[in-house]
Length: 190
Image (cartoon, rainbow, N blue to C red; front, side, top):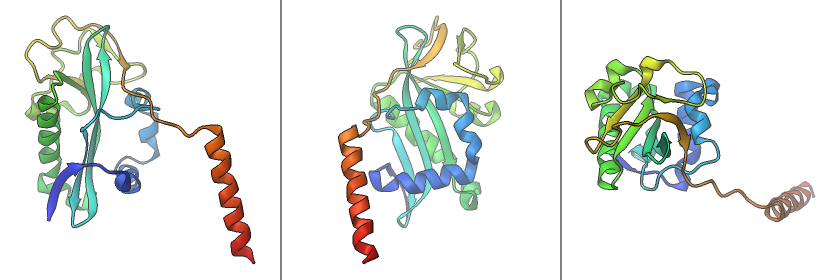
């Protein structure tokens, strides 16, 4: 059975493996990655496609500012397992993510991607002409969708990350974890 659901902690390894399979290590060099680094995705907008307990699709949306004081979301990456890419699951996942974003009160979504693919969801370059990203990108791939009409009217400036920071363990927790690992290793050696 195929379901679209919110990602859980248990999905992280499968999600990362899927993204590696679809994009390889070059995914960490992308400009949009600079907007995601060290940040949490928007609440309720980390989705996976689950097929009988296996993650075969993923999408996440992130809080950004589309210029000063202009909240928006940045979508990406979105990925579907190569073995099922012809089944329309990417479109289903995209529509679900956009529907949930609207239901949660978000007004605009940005992304960098292939315009011919994303146009069917309503994305275009119409509202990105006065915005720019913090790094290299192809202007014709920088797209926007207003979930609320007029949300990006007059938007201009640098797109910047605004989401919550990831919680990182403190030094004490890292030392304790290292000590437990060292002790566990010593016990298994005897």
